[in-house]
Length: 330
View 1: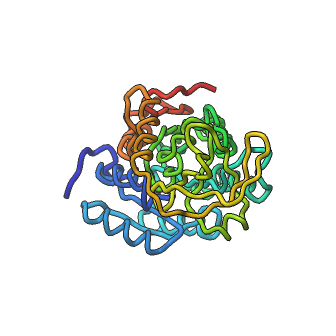
View 2 (view 1 turned 90 degrees about the vertical axis):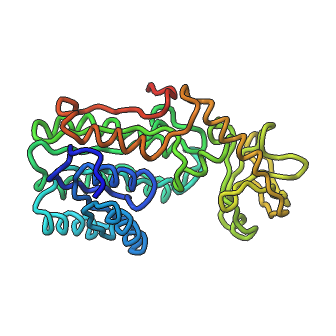
View 3 (view 1 turned 60 degrees about the vertical axis):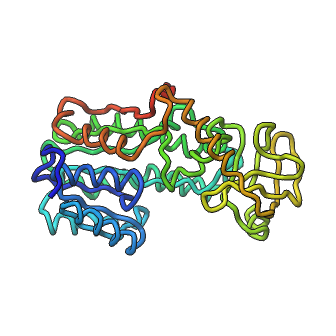
C-alpha cells in the first residue's frame, strides 16, 4: 500500500466531479494520505474506472454517480457516504461547467442558468445536505479559477461564477466557524480535458479569439458558433485554425459574416494538421507564467490537501492561488 503522508488517516473526504482531471488528482492525493475518499461523476463507467485506479494504489474508495444539479443524487451522495463511513471530514467542491464560449451580453438565459447552477448554486445545496454530518474540525474547499480574478473575453461569464466562489468562501467561513473551515483554491492553466480549449489555444490565453472543437458544418450552422478572428491566428486566406479531437487542424471557411470584430463562421475541414502551431500556442501560455510552465493536477491536489489538512488549522476564508505567478487581483 502506497502512502505519502498521514494527514488524513481516519478521515472521510467527498470530492465532486472527481473521476478525471483536477478532481481525480485531489481524490488520489487525499487517499494516498490516508483518507477514505468518495468520488463521483455523472457516468457510472467513469466512476468504476476511477475507483479501480484508486484501489490499485491502496486507497479506500467509494464511487457514486452524482450529477450535482440532481437533488436526489446529491442527497444520495451524502447519505451513502454517511451510511458507509459514519461521518464526513472533508468536502471538496470541484464540479464546474462552461457550456458556451461567448460574451456575457451574448449569453443566452439557459446558459446563464446552467453556469450559475453548476458553478455556484449546487455547491451551496450540497453543503446544506452535508452540514449536519460534518465533524468538528472539518474542512470545505471550493475549486475556483484564476479566471475569477480577471474573467477572460469569451469565457467571462464562467470567470464571473468563479469570482462568486471567492465571496462564497468568505461568507461560509464566517457562517460555519468555528467547527468547519472553508477555503478556496484558484488554479491557473492546467491541461485537463475540461480546460483543453484554454491550454491548446493561444488565442483564448490572450483573450483575443474564440475557438471550438471541430464540428460538422451542419452542427456549426445549427449552433451558430461565434469566432473572433485576429491577425495572429484565425482567418488566413479563407482558412481558420480550430481544435479537432485534440489536434489543431486548418479549417476552410465556407461562409462568414463580419460584424466589427465578431465573425460568424461556418467551416469545414480540409484535413490539414498544424501540430507545430499548437505547440507554439501552448508555449505562449507557459510564458505567461513566472515559472514558465502550465500547472498540473498534482499541483492543485497538493494545495487542496494543505487547506483541507490540520496543517491549515488556523486558515479559513482564504483563497490560495496556484497559477505559477499569473496576476491574481480583483
